[in-house]
Structures are given as C-alpha cells and as structure tokens.
Image (spheres, helix red, strand yellow):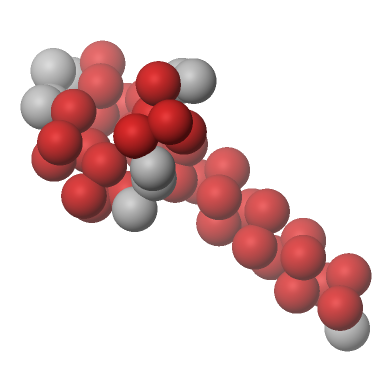
Length: 47
C-alpha cells in the first residue's frame, strides 16, 4: 500500500506542476499560481 500512496502523491504533484505551467502561460500572477497550486516558490521557479 505504501507504494500506491507514493504513486498517488507523485501524480498529484505532477498535476500541480501542469496546472502551474498552464496558469503561467495564461499570464496569471506568480503569487496567485503559488497560492492556487500550493507549490513552493522554489518549485515554481523550476517550471
């Protein structure tokens, strides 16, 4: 079950990055993207 949970969390994280990239492309402010996706500033900078 532990592997399943890790896979689920990885999928959620990947979705957050995809959403952040899309919002960035749409011109949404960085602060709003970070707040909406719950990514850290460091994670966002690596998009």
